Length: 316
View 1: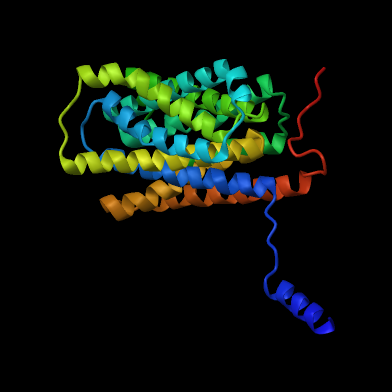
View 2 (view 1 turned 45 degrees about the vertical axis):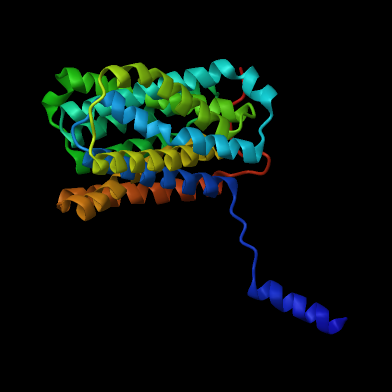
């Protein structure tokens, strides 16, 4: 008996259990979504000049069967999904608007300028989460997101004339709509809706919206273009699952700044796929974003209290 206990104790020392808290899981999920979103944009850009509806359709068509398989495996409660059907529809509509506006902006203006407008979504998420989900914001959290945004500006450096053009206004609308969609994701997951249901409903409804335009304006593709769009769809599916799980585990105020890591992944993919080399100002932006992300992580770790995982402000 003594020998068995000693062996068991040795096994426990050699194989320690790693406990990752909800906030750390949420951070990792958001960083994962940032990578997949950057990969999606890179592959969509490689696909060439295709109609926006066509890119949007292939972006989401891959997600439909994959999300359906996950739902079959997890078997979420149907009652919860039916009760929250209006919220699922709202999330799908907002997400489709944001996605379409982003692709339109990318096709009609500089990629860097379009990206900075789409990166305004965390600000909309923070504000809407405070207004509708009663999530409290501290000065440090607000300042951290603002500084991260300045870091993104160092990398992207949009022109002043961008904000007065039609495509830029559409891109701005897309960033706001995306932030609203993320807020809806958090509201749905707080009400017990399974993440696979959220991803499936968004992908399926979005494809239905895009299908008539795809039929009318379909542009023939080469096999290579098709592979790029299918790859973009797979990347988008991974991003959606990571994003949904991230916002299900932590409030937007604690994880939204990590979305800015997408510019770092975009820089790496740009170098590998397009031979783009960032300049000194871009590296300064990367340093600011990583520094703010570490600061927010340490701050949230210190602020975490038992039975107060979401730290929401009381209803007045």
